[in-house]
Image (tube, rainbow, N blue to C red; front, side, top):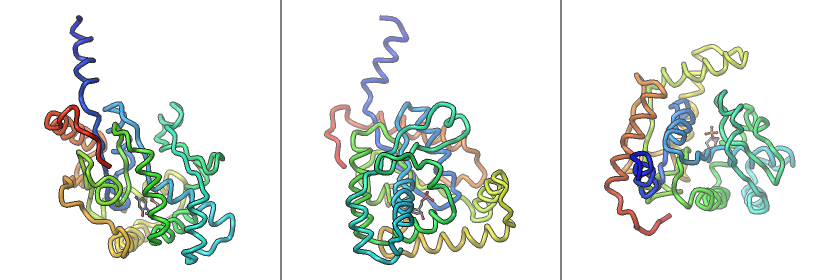
Length: 253
Ligand code: DC
């Protein structure tokens, strides 16, 4: 056996972990989660895209954002699929490709209107139940990095590695502001900071599945760290968890 074969076999025989990355808006979750998945050869799943896709469908059908029963029914009859981005799209930082009842909506869900509607329907417990079940199905086999707000607390409470990613509100606002600038959207930094504070409040104070750090999540504050450095720290933690994890343990959701 060559050295390389031996190495591959050792990697293959290692248990594939479930890694959850939760955190507030602008904490760098998406970029970091994508990079961690790429470094480990895992799949990357963006749970927020599911809330956005359902919100898009609700907007298209004029379902009011406060109509819990209609939105629950809509969630139950909706099929949302997340697929890896094409290599060209991945190179420019695209997230998952998103399919809503078979129709690709990858770009359509990235508008302020859809984000707003998604954050409203994300407060409805019955809607969350449906989407959480979908997320558990999508990531159930392990070898996955899933990002969101409640992944370590609700979706995969038994995940082997949970990260709570945070950064100061000022730095998070600056990152968002730069994204707006790149898209040619004219917001001032202070407007974006206000929006970050408002989203933090809504995410952390909502009654159903609020954004909280799971007790066993590792807090990673990346205020003074870049994406690559943060991702490599998480990969290092994953390596340690892999050494601790029994190879033939039954996978718990
Ligand atoms: O991560 P994002 O901005 O694309 O998420 C869109 C909305 O969905 C956001 O307002 C929070 C909500 N969300 C949630 O409540 N739970 C998740 N696991 C992911 C997103």
